[in-house]
Image 1 (cartoon, rainbow, N blue to C red):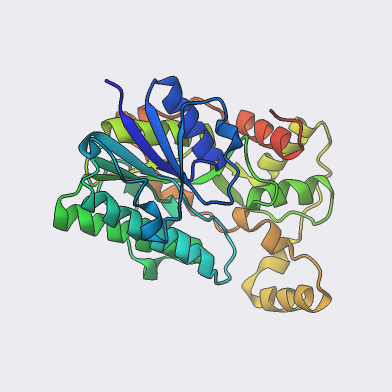
Image 2: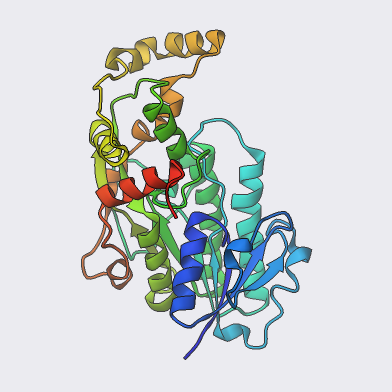
Length: 334
């Protein structure tokens, strides 16, 4: 039976794959996009395009006008991502206010199911192991950085509605997404450009990456098979900085020169002096460019091999994902 999907964040790299996969399944898709957002990527498709902003409820009224809302699935994939430690008021407006408004509207209009794009980084890091498919507790005071805090706050609000209103909501929590469609000005886009242009020496570290296409497949699996109130961790493969950059070099057809930012300059005892130097000289701080490799704590995320939602994702190796990311950011991808 054909289902009606409502999607926010549809023009992001993740959103485009979500829409594509749902259309291939023969589903009806309706998207919400800001008035100034280019939706030409959906030209020639049957996607219904509505204009509005999630942080302004009144602009979503028409979007929520539906014949059979109980048969609809809402995927809230709109988000602003940044690993910067600086305060970002726009991020809070999009990631928190937008998610709260969408949740309230879904409950008010009796939308059958809400699937929320949370983040694995919204989970506290105090050594606890998190297994996919469980109910999770979120507390913005137990995570660091605006992105993690805003996702934790929004996730906590949705879980409260699940508990108090018995509302059918499911959360998906990906680690760091890469793949085709990655914006050049994104965190990982800056890493690639900085490294390939030899602008800033990389720092040692590592991270767990997941392909955006696998996340899209996982979200759809959560929409179709997820358990109300459960959170599903979508994670991929770990890559040290050197391993990641070796894959980048192979994809770009260049050689890794092996130069790395000295580890001792990253130690807490001298870090503030190093930071002060880069601030005063207005030079690019390697810690800022390569922060993704120094802020990872992905080892605490576990998945259950029998998990139906995780079974809906997976299949794209991170090596291939890195290659596709490099190709896209370099402007040679489709």
